[in-house]
Image (cartoon, rainbow, N blue to C red; front, side):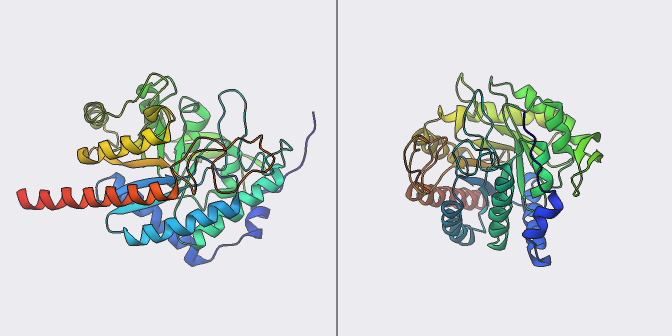
Length: 343
């Protein structure tokens, strides 16, 4: 066993400082997502981007393109970029940018923390909101001031530690149903996240501390399907939303168009999203879509790993992504116009 000292959250943050305008942009984006969640904003939330980040240059190129679409469609969509720098694994595999930034199993976490902070800082300066899965609780203090939307994944949704963590976040946190498809696990996580907790953490100086949370009122459900198939039919969405409302929980649901809902087939993900668009209602908060510069995925065993194609789950290409966003906006606009005519 080898122990290697890491920089404190304060030290890493000092390398990548933020202006007051930067911090205000993060706060504003969080408020907008919260307003959509609670029905105060009629726009859709679209969490979109790579399955995982493995290249800073590739991620920034994708972000620059996404920013243009975000500005173009800001009246209809609140776009938040998936910037997952940690990857949960069922058994083994690449653990993400923070754990293995060189993609060679050297586990240079020191560099990984700096690269993740650098990327997030650049995205904030671009005024592009960031979405991140909350996996390792001790990494959050390094990035907590940069995140607009977080999620608790299917493998950790039943974890007390992750429920306590999400209760302390100042940004909205989505709870995914379990890998086995249990929606109850996510609903239990929502109840726990709404409540205050005291738990182990680290402070900005890297010291072990006891953190007390007030509870997070902006938690919500993410339906991501399971190994048994999808769970995002209009009927399931409506029934689940009604159940959430009866339990006095936030009832608007984010639909993950990948993972179990698509059978991990990115082309099915595209079809699924288009099928759900005509059924948009107050029950649907928005969509999550895995998308990158080039279509599909690449093996990490190739001699040279390209910066512009996923190394984990397959993603939609940029061309497919831009076309999908245009379709969502057009369908949303048409539906809104019909509502005005018949109201």
